[in-house]
Image (cartoon, rainbow, N blue to C red; front, side, top):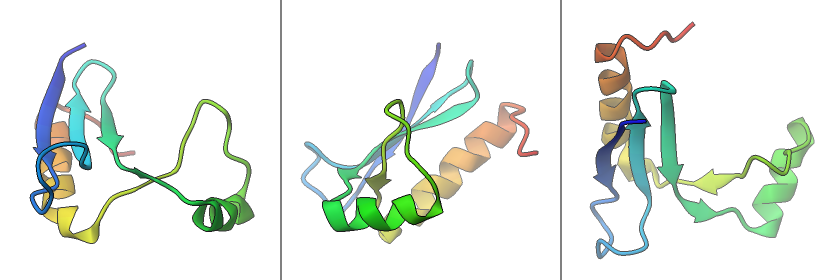
Length: 82
């Protein structure tokens, strides 16, 4: 696995903050975000169960450009979006 660091949330102190990476072997985005609270978790369950192997995390909208950069990196790597 080659995990490529994309960026951290620029509006935090640099520690314990939302972060985005791209795994070029698995062709996956890896994200660190704030844990979903009970209310948000319950709202997410209205569309279906969340397996124990998955988690709901929150990323601030101000990270939109970081997420776009991660998508650009994936596209350059040949990742398929279909």
